[in-house]
Length: 217
Image (cartoon, rainbow, N blue to C red; front, side, top):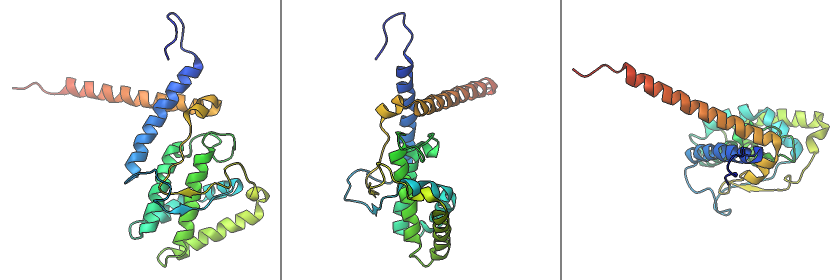
């Protein structure tokens, strides 16, 4: 996909390259979270759908949910599988950094945002049934229900609201949609800049280390 000699690369092609690099780094992070295969829809735990309106409410309590799940995952196999799946989905969704991933139906990151927030919601449901975590989980559920009653838009739905999920299948954003979306492509550029800056910093540290190394006797 190289341009003709003497011409600068088109912005769209630069965005494509940036998105490829960014998602390649996400793939590595997701692999680190996952302990096994992530494809094969009948092999894992089912995760019910989450509506568009619910996503923002669960996102508000995400830190509490994940902290509780992290503690419970040490002793509960179902929670551990859901927690690991949440981590994989969250990584593929650029750790919630993609603009509009939760709120904008047209975002290429909206389907994967549905996936990781649905996993977080299901974590709450599962933990509310376990004696060790029922109290805190039910308290979070109660706060979510209070917010839901006070938020008219909590019942809003979108094209992904009916989709169910599974811990054995990962929802990935599509590169072709990312590079066509200006806000998402900008994230690709930023991620590429961070990766490039990190590489330059690491190279500089290695060079300094070599120059400061004492000469052998």
